[in-house]
Length: 348
Image (cartoon, rainbow, N blue to C red; front, side):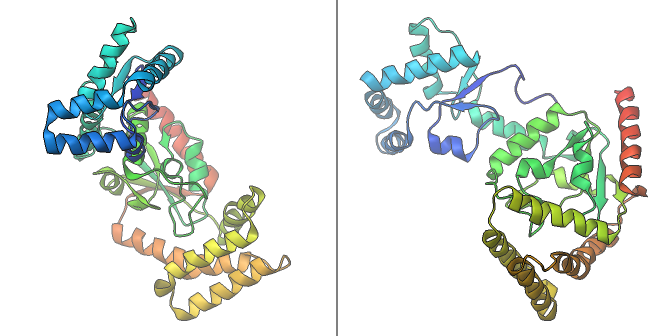
């Protein structure tokens, strides 16, 4: 499938701040012709009095100094960003009004046909059928802490789904960053997918990654793809998790108290699946590790892997009956995928 928009387009989103925050085309900048309050006023007037009245109200709201400031910001952005296209919801009134004002200043740019609504329609169509994913995908699997994310980041044919989602996928997977909303997650992922080679390498994920969901049939394509499985000793996996989930966050400025609280909340979320005894044991080990600098975090991490994550992953692996085409240690899997990647590149 062709790209949703030309990669050379530099875009300005003319919609209100709230519309922009709900979802926009990746790398667009927001210069609203109607701010949030004005947009609501015009919308209400349109419903009550019709199009002509709403247009007149919009012109009254964006006039004088306000209009001059808007046009000035628009021209500055166009010249600085070398913007080629502007857009609003449907590429209609707001876009045509801005174009008219720009033409009066001898500034030439274009309207993105159909606006954001047409763009979103194309995103949804892309993910509506497995046939639209034309390449061969390989899924990197392995028990929690195997280094799956680190491996795919080293391969040019991969997409880091957790990076786009700003979440590590598990109940304990918050990165401390605000996740994109669903539309922006889908938009960024779609752009990354269309910029990537058709033969992809992806980390094994659930349909939901934190608070966002893989769009359309994307997860279904992953489920029928072949898998490369990283084998790693539990002691090594514990060390990886200790570094990624405890040492690095503390090093990056998250307080011990805040991290402890976050993990207590995460543990509570899986209490029923763990069972009362396991929950109490892990909770006590977690608290002792955070309350005392001399007490090891390895104990609660090991228990959490053995009594929850490993069992859960093994169950999913057994029930899905995925086609494992290769398994081995981290280096072996990386070597296998690197060679596979080079071979597929030569075919394209």
